[in-house]
Length: 118
Figure 1 (cartoon, rainbow, N blue to C red):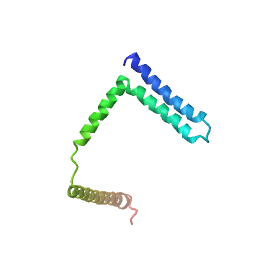
Figure 2: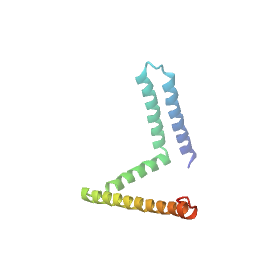
Figure 3: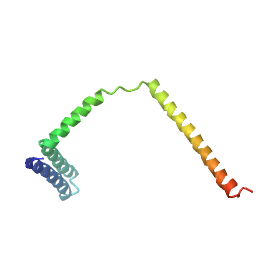
Figure 4: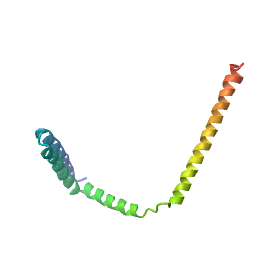
């Protein structure tokens, strides 16, 4: 990363800090002005980040992500219901299996090996 980009990112951090400090420096009875100070600090920081190389890369990445999200083919209601049913059946079968294993091991250890069932 170039020095220029590092300075822009440092400036962005300082702008956010300035927005937070401005928020707490303004009296509580001026709530709109307090919120505006913070929002202005964050917006200016976002602008500074956007002008840096990492910021431009992030914007390009976000745009590519949106393009890919538009390509997603969602399942129909019928397919979603079938898959949900399959998940419920699998969970039920797995729960029964684990109950059987637990009961079997409990019987083996407590009744057979330790003899506590007598």
